[in-house]
Image (cartoon, rainbow, N blue to C red):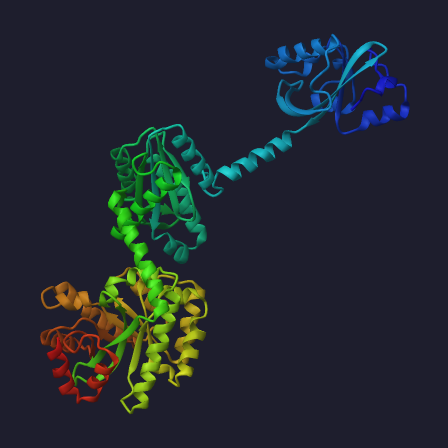
Length: 580
């Protein structure tokens, strides 16, 4: 750009060439457009870049006013500024770079970056603008803005934009409702049908969810399968409930993705401001508490209620107690026998966790297991259970008791830690136990994960001879796929089927089908929850040979279990039953 010392190359209104040929060549060929005007706003010089930028020949620009390249709506402001500078008033833009809009010959507007200089030459005041087309930069900025505010897969607003709009609504004092949406079964879609199908499903959701709501509702994608809804201008629970109910109904119809019909469940938690939270953090925390309750019910919605906070406070208190209990060594194992239905002989034991609470006494898993499973100390406790059960099994063998199989339940965190096979095999070796002395029990939470990283350690353990049982078989929708993918050796029929099998033909049919399938696949079976001789007889007639339940014994401390094992089989069964 020309500066105050550039008087030696001022261009005449007629467009005469710059006197210094070397400098003139530079000005003509720089990438920036150069436009010079006089005090009246008439163009006195343009370079080749200006011709290309604006679409005019030099002869079509020189001699015309600057209005030629200024959008009509901006001409008044520009002309007023030119008049002030032309009359001798210093320009406030000199030496600065500003972004303004310019006009091409075809009438299209585009953004430019302008650096202005003013000088006095032989013909008076002149003004020069060095101009750069920043259309590409603006487009990049717009793309970056979209990336910062939009979810790239679905096109919905992302977490940042959702949080921003929520903050704006609360700052403006608007009555506001938020809904948090969590998909039930989306991970299974990714695992079984592939991530491409999962992505397409999310895109379908981005269409269906807004269609189920009023036009002013904002639907955002917060994470993998997490969505949120912002309802501005409504702070009544009824409005949030109506929106949640509509969303729930929208999931009744399956999603058609390629050749697949996919049925998803959904859990929705809602909260309204200001009653459930005065700021964004508190409001979202309230909605999350409601979502937690909805997840417990499954395929439902819940709006926040104050007592939910009390439940969370109690949960946090229990988490703190568990942390103390882990450090204090307050956990113990009891053992429930698995017996031969025909002889009553103890064939195995299931190690079951108990908490020897200092003030509440001996607690069963029902009092704390749900919290422990998601606790930071779950991995520590799971490792202790495995080690203690193996130690106890080795001790009984060392005392000359008949070798039995020891069943140990796994936490999901033990599988996700990535070193399950190594931990189990090392533990067996440390206590001098053969691999077939141990049986690991997996629940549906673990079995649902069919990724190779999850299956690999179980395959390694199976090859080593460790037993693998599917606990509570028949209660979950992943049961058949689990049998196919996991190297199972045993099925445990859930107690709910055993309880009603004598009065409910459907339950009896399920038990019979499981026994037949296991027999054909070469899998062992243990029936859980046997409480009566009639149940035992019916199971035996169906072909079941091993059972577990209160008919034989509740879970016992190690010393009592050892006494049970030492008694003759028939006497042991009678003695154990007498304790119930």
